[in-house]
Structures are given as structure tokens and as C-alpha cells.
Length: 190
Image 1 (cartoon, helix red, strand yellow):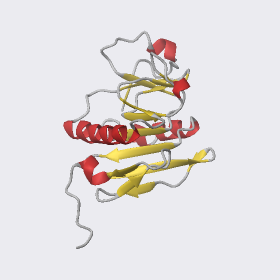
Image 2 (spheres, helix red, strand yellow):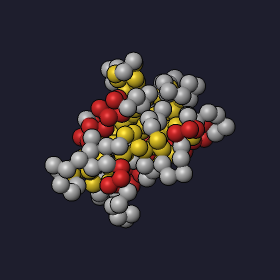
Image 3 (spheres, rainbow, N blue to C red):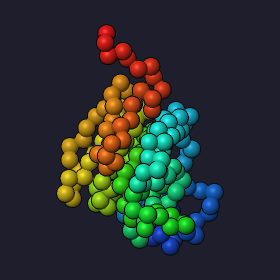
Image 4 (cartoon, rainbow, N blue to C red):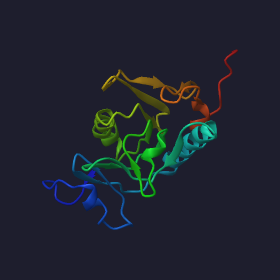
């Protein structure tokens, strides 16, 4: 996790808009984080599979699926680019970005960003009222899910590569994790 610019300065979305287009940054509580290096092939494959599966299941239903890079402006001091997100409220979708909390956010862990995803981003998503936050570990092959209960996330749930993840924020959407992780499904009859 690399902190950008001066750590004592608090950055805003206006500052963010002036930074070079060929660099990827996020702002969490006014602190800028560099999103380099680029994600691994495994990270991109797992994220891509999750995005395709959820996008296909949502086709024609309420909710739009997005994949990074896309700016999500949670506040003046909080701008993130989740790996995958779903927004059900069309008013939050603008030409330039997403304004406000998505219904579902998915982050695929990378060694350089894992702590930020599990600590700072989880706290930010909870504070911003993201209904469901999913963390995918593409190396250890598990999914960790947090569901908003009131104003706080409940205890996390862990799902392995042979389980089905039933999304809480999008009723009726089930994801076979063996498809996401591209592993062979075990025969339940054995």
C-alpha cells in the first residue's frame, strides 16, 4: 500500500481530477493511495469471471454492473475504484462516475492492496452504507462477505471454491464459486 503525495495533506475529489490520467489513485479519508502495480493475471481472471457471471445474471433486471477502472465518489474525501460494483439506483450513475454508495462492491485481493481492502476500504464501505461487501482471494480461493445490518457490517461469512454464494443485496442471484475460481466442481453424490 503506497501513500501518494504528502501524507499530511488532505486530498479531495477536485485534487484527484487534476492528477495525470495515466496514473491510478484512490482517496480514502483524504489520503491518496497509488494503485500500482497492475493486478496479476490470476486477479484479472477471477475478477473477470465474477463480473461476467453477475452481469449475465443481472441482464434485464434492476441493477447495473461495472468493472474497474470507474470512479465511485462516496464523499469529497473518498474516491475509490472497486474491482466490481453493482448500482441499483440509476440516479447515482452519471456520465463521469458513480455518485454515492453502490449496492454491492467486490474487491479482488492483490498483495499490494490486501490490507487496504480488508481494513480501510471495509471501514469506508461500511460508513458509506454499501449494502454488501465481498472480498475475493484469488490465491487462497475463498470469498469473504460482509452484509450491512443497520449501520454496521455483521460478522463476516467465508465461502470456499466449492460453495454457492447467494447475494444478499441482489435477491435471487446465486454465484457458483467453482466457476469464478475456474476449478472443477466436486460431485456432491460422492
